[in-house]
Image (cartoon, rainbow, N blue to C red; front, side, top):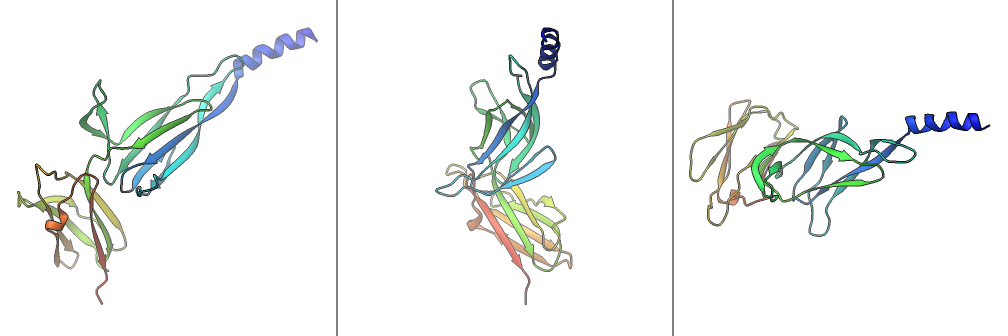
Length: 211
């Protein structure tokens, strides 16, 4: 019997057992967050005055051995929002303005890794196209610069599109105009002073079929 025990224990130590940890994403911005983990896509709605939407995902965190736990497992995370982007930070934790949409997080055994999407980094415009026509060009220009800035040439009927924008401040106040070109080459202008967008604000263009 002793010989059997001595043989089994080293095998158990060598093989270990699989463990899981949790990744929890908490959306504190006012608008949708989109993220992808392990090939699965998720959407978190924007926060309200009383709730911060969140999603918790259980992931493989590596091997746990008989006498010690592993250091966890690195997992690739794609994450961005309608008014939020991840960014690099300096040594004091202040954002550098170098934005990214992809990073790696460490998932540790029996622990929850939390990611808060805060603070917001942009304003944005969002188009819900139920006009019955495809949008073949979408531009913006501002109250201080009439130059058309191209955003996209593909918003099919029935689709939704968003684009992050620089935001206004009390010291740098401005507003946006948005130019829509349909596939019949008709045009539509939206915006104006109602589109003076501060941080974490969004201008919504909800297009419906004309009767």
